[in-house]
Image (cartoon, rainbow, N blue to C red):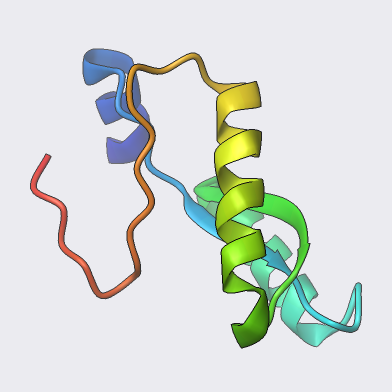
Length: 85
């Protein structure tokens, strides 16, 4: 609810960005789908997750985000970064 409030009041959209596992529909994908159903805070990319695919994931993220949201700025941070909005 707080993420939606931030989006509505300040125009700031926050999402966890993730692709898919090597085995589509497997246990990991189902777990992410279940969490997304509950919290609605994921942006799922058409991308297979993997360490050697990080630059492709970044490119796909920016093109997907630009297609979904009309924004002045797009930011990607890792999960160990604290962003002071």
